[in-house]
Amino acid sequence: MNLAQLGLTLAGGLLCACCIGALAVLLTWRERAASAPERWRRLVTVVLPGSVVLLGLMLWTLLHVMLLWAPGAGGVVAVR
Image 1 (cartoon, helix red, strand yellow):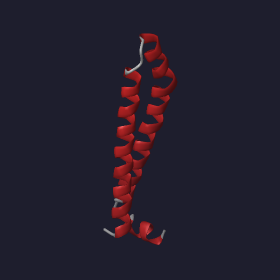
Image 2 (image 1 turned 180 degrees about the horizontal axis):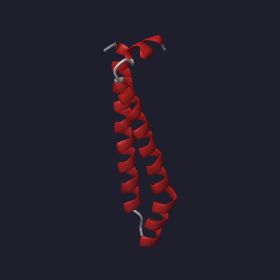
Image 3 (image 1 turned 90 degrees about the vertical axis):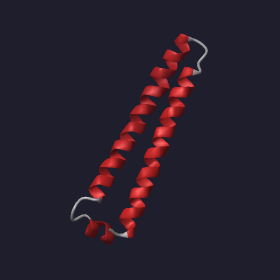
């Protein structure tokens, strides 16, 4: 374990926590619409595309953190 691995892991964890918070804000914003048609419009135009982007970013981050801690990856991180 080296300092670069630990720092990148903490940054990845922070990024995932921020994505979860942003998802919560999106869903809360959708529920605060005045009418059902407005909630549907917000869902289709903002919440679904935003959720896809945020969840994709979380999966990408988790994949790279797992690859970072894979056996034999310590030397690669130290070189870069």
